[in-house]
Length: 474
Ligand code: G2I
Image 1 (tube, rainbow, N blue to C red):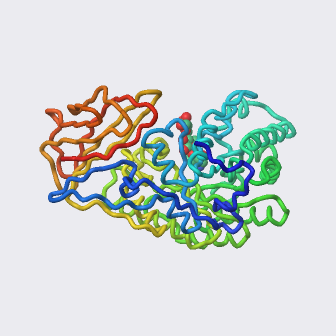
Image 2: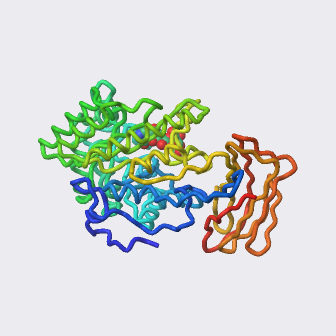
Image 3: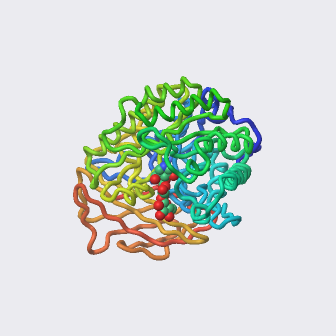
């Protein structure tokens, strides 16, 4: 289903991408009642006594809309099916392609374009009434080698950049609400970063890029985006001075993106003050790449600290009208850049590797005015997720986890609601009769200790749709 909204309709009625930073129509969409605690998965609880269902709390995007804000996530286009797609569509009102719109992705060979993943994300966003934050047009990284290895006169380099902006912004004209036009232009000390662009074109590559982007899509909100600019410091002050001078010169600049790749316990104390000073310049501010990394393994104390950090960031944004919202840089720990870049660190996002919401998820919801229901202590839970899906097949998994309780054997059941059939299971014995599936432990994995978990998987077939069933553990 595609959005019925014409591509040219004004966004001011549906998006926090307005000059005031507030949405006049909060997104309050009906949600299926079976969703539990905004969770990625439908879980079943087995407590010492009666099984207690968790309350159906509102998705983050609805909570954010009620505050005039957006809640976003970076996504990978190829993953937008199964549980990952369910969460991306349900919980978020902004999508940022994590890599799909970078120059190296869209024009791997000069004049040869690949828009497949970017198109997929934009189509998904429209089908889910979401806005897209385009990322990113001018950067020193993830450029195609034909560009970085070439030898260009300044005039030719400027033409290449102009054409790139024209082509990409023009392609998505009316469909991308905001662009990170320029990404990461500064060094930590506030001087300009030496890049292909700065070295070849001088500092005015920034003004030129913004001007070209405005010409290619006058309705898109145009941002400069950087990291380590969340608090008041030399780098954020350089960004502030740049935005101020661009405004004075009449260069089109609508917002600044504070990436917010944060370290556990290190939310800058001047975050709100910094957001406010940009807002006072007359630009929007967005938190664009939020994550909070920690040394692995995570534990409950670190996860609680992380929840407080997420909440502090949300509160700072909520306190400033022109802060339009926050985007997390991947919503699940299995889809985060952190472990690759910082070996030994991770667990930086609001969902764990099995798409179960973490304390950080609940902290975001609560900052946005929502209520969340913690699972009761002393429970074992079963969580079903689709980990992969193709034409007619899919792979699913169920994770049984205990906290304050333990199991010596287990049996999990569910009803497939759309004709799905299990073909083959591992780490469990499964049987299907009509829609009803029951799976019990294998000889070697009946024991789930307090604090431990067991996962089993299966391949199945589907057609039409593949909804996540409600699982019972008993
Ligand atoms: O580095 C974190 C972010 C900092 N701000 C700008 C963002 O654009 C940037 O995102 C990350 C992506 O999340 C990573 O996924 O940018 C990285 C590159 O600097 C991305 O990493 C790259 C890997 O380096 C490649 O090896 C890989 O092929 O992701 C590519 C696609 O998975």
